[in-house]
Amino acid sequence: MHNHNHLQPPPTTISSAATTTSICRSITFSTPFILLITTLFSLLLILSLSFSPTTPPPHPHPSLFPNYLNSPSTPNDQTTLPPTPPSIAYLISGSTKDSSRILRLLFSIYHPRNQYLIHLDKKTSKSELNNLALTVQSVPVFKAAQNVNVIGKADFRYKIGSCSLAAKLHGASILLKLSKSWDWFINLSAADYPLVTQDDLLHILSYLPKDLNFVNHSSYIGWRESKKLKLIVVDPGLYLAEESEVYYATQKRVLPDAYRLFTGSSSAILTRKFIEYCILGSENLPRTLLMYLSNSPSSESVYFPTILCNSQKFNRTTINHNMLYASLNSRSQARRLNSSDFNDLLMSGAAFASPFKVDDPVLDQIDHELLHHNRDEPVPGGWCLGDTETNKCSVWGDAEILRPGPGAKRLEKHFLELFSNESYLSDQCQYEKSSSSR
Image 1 (tube, rainbow, N blue to C red):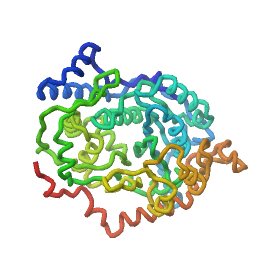
Image 2: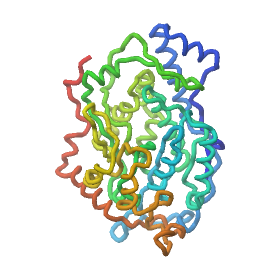
Image 3: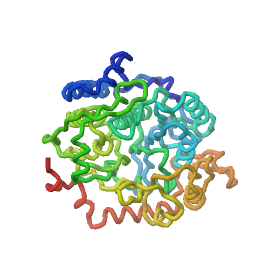
């Protein structure tokens, strides 16, 4: 169990109080000066994503991981045994007064094989952060599996700007350091919730190639998105220690020629290899795009789709679906889901859905009918050996044993539809020339 007050992840704030205050107030600075300042901040942000030193965590409980210290001498015989379940790294993000929602989400997606990193942004009080960390540390199975961590030194997450992207990359870099064994990275917010159990999800993922990246993407920018991408903003979350407002420069810029921009949703299911490609910077594209988006109001929805579709190494691994259900209103914004949406959630075949209102009754319905657990207890899986329904996960067994349920059938059907007749290839990083107006 770790609280990152001990890990001390590298900060993303980098200026003295006097300098940052003058920058924030002097909105009359020229656009080239703004670009220079924020580019310098983005360069330092890239350096801040390097791994921080930490001591190795203690070994997890042997009842959950009986083979933890025993490396098999021969590969798993796939003809007689099911494939070894994968592992997912979850980054769960929230803000002030989101602790109860995050804990509920954590219990709903918990599995001993996975890694979990919780990030409450800088708007959250120190007492709320400490209480959340203490609550996490008090859950016996979290402590036994050594797989739930809380970031102690938080980042800002504004609705626009690039600090949200910086926080996501920062969290991903910590997860890479915490464990060498996870296969996919999933970022969730406090407003998200699962529609299947982790046994369902891990069971289906164990039969898929581990190089597939699931992210909504489109090259169609349109005049609205084009206008957003051409605007220049200064995001104080990258360099100020105190909360301030994002402000706009008066000038605009042209879209880049060196690569094609793709837009999508901020949520995605991404492979470890792709996350390493973005974090470790083996090529110039991730760094170049990060610098370009440091001045953009829409960086979080552009960064991952653009890198995936412009990289020859990853563009054929991209599936145009993020496995998250959302219902858009007339303004193309995701509306809050409620009990009237339950049947649509069930039929969607998605693994997650968003956004939900705090403690909406539909969440109780999902807990009862789909996940079969109480909100303050882990979802029962193959690793739970308790002899009563109310205390099933108090006794632990081998975390490699999965007991998929109806949710796995829904996921299987959905994946079969995605991959049928190789139709997913026609929706994979396709560039629409009509969207290239500048």
